[in-house]
Amino acid sequence: MAASPPFPTCFRWLIVLAIMLLLSGCEASLFAGLNATDRHAGIETQRDIAFDAQHQLELDVYRPADVTHAPLVVFFYGGSWVRGERAWYRFVGTALAAHGVIVVIPDYRKYPQVKMDGFMQDAARAVAWARDHAEALGGTPDDVFVMGHSAGGQIGALLATNPSWLEPYGLQPNDLAGFIGLAGCYNFMPIPASEKDMLGMFGRDAASQARAQPVRFVRGKEPPMLLLQGTADHEVEPSNAVSLAHALQAQHEDVTLDLYPGVGHNALVFALSRPFQHDAPTLDDVLRFIHAHPVASKVTATH
Image: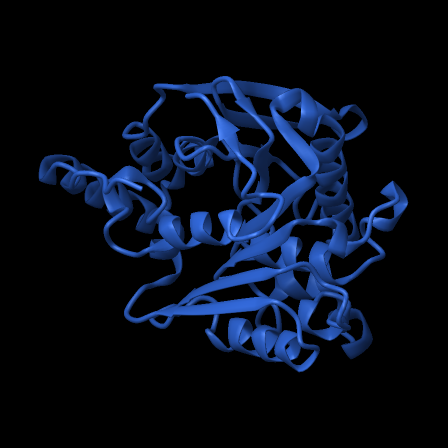
């Protein structure tokens, strides 16, 4: 693919300012800055689509214009399972859609409104919706990937390892075309006593916490996985990705682990935005993984 030109320095400084706002607690300002730089040409956007009326949950869709049989990615954002909004991650949807991928970004309920079962049920319902509507969006049901960052990575990885979440929809983890994890939480027990929210949503006893660990459910029936992780991540230890990769390798599963030297937790996903795409190869590696698989390689886009 053709390399994108370097993003203007003046705009990068605006984003740096937005990051400073993030550190002061103004997350919405940061994401507004990132989204102000994305591209829209050749991309169709459908927002506020209800996929769970009972819980008032909606999703956004980003798709290349006039696409057929394209791969589809369901992206779960992070936020420690307690915060975040789908609109903040428009830059993820437009970045992938600009390269021929349909992207669905759903919201999900968060703690303390629900505990783990609640947001996992929301995530499974969103994936089922994506498969049911894949053809209408220009994709195919057999070419649906799950992708997530941080807490969203844990959600996506559980869908890809523990069959109980997708089972109500007649699906199994290996019905997914693949899982893409960006600095996901895959192996994080025991949960420290200081992490009150995590103890509240995942439980205090070992058996309850084990249900939240994707690494505990690897059994050799998983979809292909791409695990991306920065070595300078001080929020999610790189050992999470390494341990999940080792568990999959032990079962002779298709897994790729890429460790990015010097890349931090948020920088890994921010590299999908235009200002920071040259700071880490996140976008290139995600696209390479998607197009490396048989069904996903049959893309015929006319955009």
